[in-house]
Length: 75
Image (cartoon, rainbow, N blue to C red; front, side):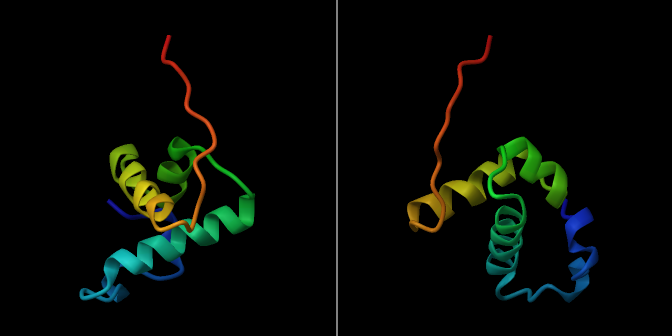
């Protein structure tokens, strides 16, 4: 589900051939605005599930476009 952040670019205006890049761009814009964010914060701001946000961030990290700097143990 993609919601809040895409108010600037409604889902029906996303390019069906290139939707992945549209979401990558929204994640990068969010990081530019906030400097850093947790996956949970990204998922809430962008209206994505945490799993989807994790997948997008992992691809961006693999491409060298973002850096993952912290992992914590769950209690």
